[in-house]
Image (cartoon, rainbow, N blue to C red; front, side):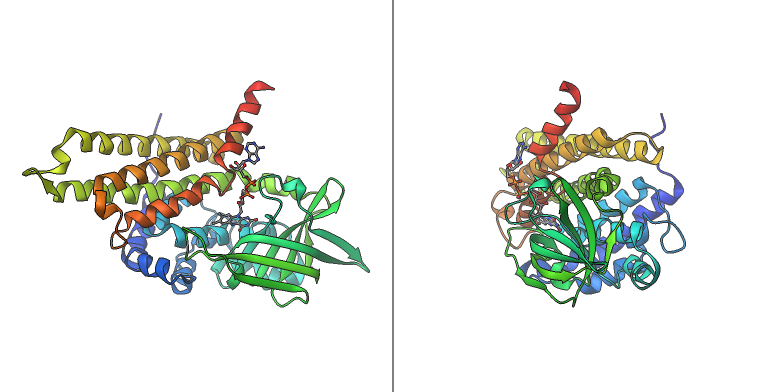
Length: 372
Ligand SMILES: Cc1cc2nc3c(=O)[nH]c(=O)nc-3n(C[C@H](O)[C@H](O)[C@H](O)COP(=O)(O)OP(=O)(O)OC[C@H]3O[C@@H](n4cnc5c(N)ncnc54)[C@H](O)[C@@H]3O)c2cc1C
C-alpha cells in the first residue's frame, strides 16, 4: 500500500497552502465581520486554476480528485467561508452547465465560469423542501419550445453575486429536471443575504422565479436526480475536505497556543488533560484525512465510492466539529474571544454538518445499504 502523494499533488498542496496563508488567512476575520463576498480572492483563486481543476482540458486541467481535495483543504484552512464560495463555483455552480450546455450558451458561459469570471449557483433547497428534494414545488413548463420556471428557492450560495442559476424544478409528478436561468432574465429576483452564524462571507439568499425564462434545459427532462448522482459523491468528498481544512487550522492554533500559554509555572501543553485533547484532535484529524483520501483514491481508480464518500463526509464533519470544540477548550477564554479565530472556526465548522447531506441523512443512507 502506497500512501505517498505524487509530485503534482505535493505541488498543488504547496501552491494553495501558500496562497491561503499569505492571502486568505490575513483577511478572514475581516471578511467574517463585514461580511462580504471575497471578490478579489475569488478572482485570484480563478487565476490559480482552481475552478477548472476537475474539468477536462483545454478549459480545465483534468486534475484527479485527490489533488482537488488537497486544494480545497488548504483554502478551507485559510477561511471556510472563502473555500465554500470557491467550491460552490468549482463543483455545483458550473458542473451541470459544463456537462449539458450546448452551442452559443456553452461558448459564452463555460470557459469564463471555469476561470471564475461568470459566477454560478445551484438552486435546490426551498422554504419547505430541504433534505427531501422530491417535495420541491418549483415547476417548469414548456411553451413554444421555451421553458419557464416558477417557484421559490432559499439558502442559495453566491446568489447575491451570481450570473447564472442552475435550477432544479418539477417537470412531472415524480420528475425533476435541471435548468439554466441567467441573471437579468425577467421574473428572477434575488433576496437579501440571509444572516447566519458561520461561513458569513459565503453569501446565501433566497431566489424567486416568477415565470422566469430558462436559457436552457440542462440534460434530458426528468433526469435531474440522475444528473445530481453523477456529482454527489464528489460534493461529499469536497465537504469532507472543507471540514479537514478548518479542523486542521483549529488543531494547529490550539497546539501553538498550548506551547505558549503557561499556568502553574508550566506551559499548558505539559498538563495531561490538555495533552489528551491534542492527542484526540490529531488522531481524529488523521483518521478523517485517511478515510477521505481513500474514498478519493477509489474515485480516481474508477471504483464505486458512493458509500465511501458518505462515510468520509460523515466522519470528517463530525470529527471537525469535535476538533474545533476541543481547540476552544484549550484556549479557554481566548477561544471565546473574537480576537482569536477559534470562535469563528466553531461557528463556521457547523456548515460541514449540513452541506452535502446532513449527518442524519448520511447515517440513514449508509445503514440502508447494509440493511436492505
Ligand atoms: C450555509 C449554507 C449554504 C447552503 N447552500 C445551498 C445552495 O447553494 N443550494 C441549495 O440548494 N441549498 C443550499 N443549502 C441548503 C442545504 O442544502 C439544506 O439546508 C439541507 O439540504 C438540509 O435541509 P434543511 O435545512 O431544510 O433541513 P431538513 O431537511 O428540514 O432537516 C431538518 C432535520 O431533520 C433531519 N431529517 C430530515 N429528513 C430526515 C430523514 N429522512 N431521516 C433522518 N433525519 C432527517 C435532518 O437531518 C435535520 O436534522 C445551504 C445551507 C447552508 C446552511
